[in-house]
Image (cartoon, rainbow, N blue to C red; front, side, top):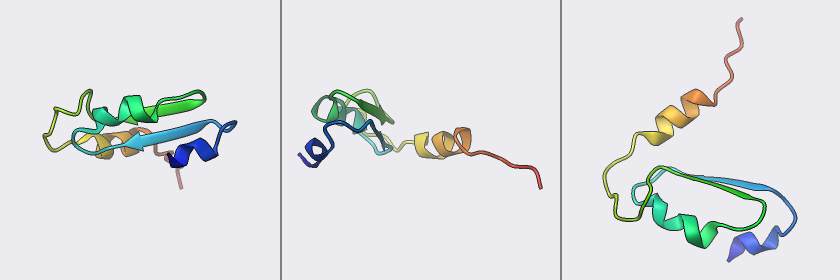
Length: 63
């Protein structure tokens, strides 16, 4: 897996797609933060997670 090339770095991965929960186990490892839009690979509905994730993590600086 491509992520094995980063053994010491802390990695954060956000998967915003449908059925993204299926990636939790294969991507999990030491020093990894894995965030998915669904809990399991069986959840195949369209997600709205990305929009709200970006909004919640956007720094708004007053002009």
